Image 1 (tube, rainbow, N blue to C red):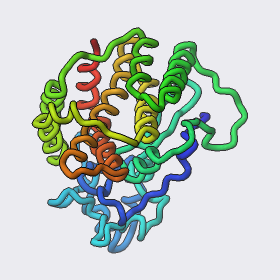
Image 2 (cartoon, rainbow, N blue to C red; image 1 turned 135 degrees about the vertical axis):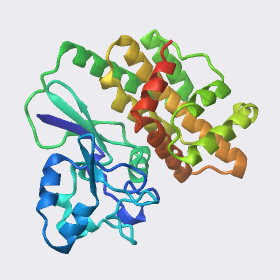
Image 3 (cartoon, rainbow, N blue to C red; image 1 turned 60 degrees about the horizontal axis):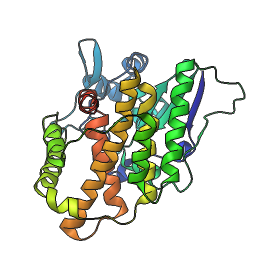
Length: 314
């Protein structure tokens, strides 16, 4: 099947031990059946070690994390012993894929990079050229999509264009998007949104602290502007539109996913303003960290993602 990716996709490289937020810590690591069969065949001391850290619950195989929620094969240098001992080709599928995601269409798979990875966030937000999809491999065949899929992709392209045309006034672009969609963003205060988020599953205590901070500073945040980051915020909105729109189930869900892209942008911008208030500075690395944290807490929890989408249905 034809696979398309953002033009920056091939520029991504895992930074391994240099990563501040390793994907080998704090995440359940499932093992696919093919890799499990191979791991069971590994001999010697490493094979014994490998199989002693595999558990099976409700038909799902995964690694047993240590008391600090580290993968048992993440060594003291924050490098992967499976990679070192068995090679990259013998990692389980989830480790090979991360932070990649897939959108499945009838005759095409869209692949992208998830912003829960700090290096992916840096790559996505630092793009200076307009968002463009390319073939993962050299392919010349036409993509045969359904009528509904073509419509959604065309709407998505229209929204990209609106955002790019309003690079110097993103909020005006957002207003144009909602006019185009004939939809409205829910009328809630910052405190109301934060209360809703605090009722969701919290994966990282830092997220709860940040949410409580911005709630306590609501009036000051509303009065404080944030200069710069226009291109980065454009990239942020485009990322969320790209990732989520094609997964819609109907028109209301499509509109909610567009609203989600706006919600994500506004909340991440508010976190940046909060940082500016607290330390008189907010830099690119801060923006990347807030984008990563939002993605980890919301995009990578299906329960949280569904709850936020429900909040955005008016």
